Image (spheres, rainbow, N blue to C red):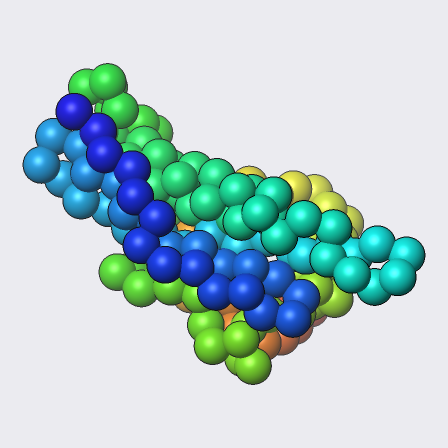
Length: 154
């Protein structure tokens, strides 16, 4: 039996963040998910409830992804992936969180080096132990950008 639960959420100026808990077969997993807050022409949020739903969906996807990574889905073993640390799903403090501009630069640099998103995700895990670029701090993102920009095409 699976139980899905939203433990808490926060609404910031430009994004919403949700913490979810999934219990399945006695195993408990938690993850954060985030979503930007789109604004209308007057600068008002379009739909905070829809943004919270997107953030929760992303968090639930991370939980499902961590189950796949551990080889726990339907008794099948997934391909080996880069190891991650216990704090990989913890979003940094909002003041220290990777910026949208840094994320865009990371994705662009990874495309230029023919890494794609999967290659970037592996690089993030190899360098920081985190599951994705969205969990980086500004400093970690800068270090990865430096590594990508100093790297020759493979």
